[in-house]
Image (cartoon, rainbow, N blue to C red; front, side):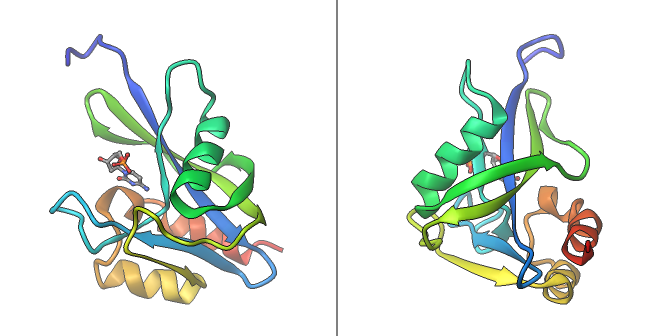
Length: 140
Ligand code: DCM
């Protein structure tokens, strides 16, 4: 893809439960480089779709949850020349996260997230958001 070619967006959900001060992580099954690592769940934005709508669709498909989407969090991350990853905050409105494509899900608090980052258990792209996520989890 040339530098001037279309850039596709991948949207990830920073799904936060403010009552429990915790963040939802999902464990990837593929590709091999990131299999077994934990990510903020999400997926590619389709043509004509807003990032918010794409995130709601992906989370319904992948985890069976309905979410309310909030604002951007953290910097955007270039995955490739033609693929950019952004994170949006979200909260669960209905459903219980049950993985269909991931091998597991878990809720972590700020300390848990920090420990997982130190251990290299997060997908590399998402690791850049850790400080922003910890700040968000501590917000009053
Ligand atoms: N991706 C990522 N972090 C996320 C979600 C996705 O790094 N939280 C990357 C993994 C893939 C691409 O985005 O390279 C598309 O994701 P998927 O395979 O889930 O559609």
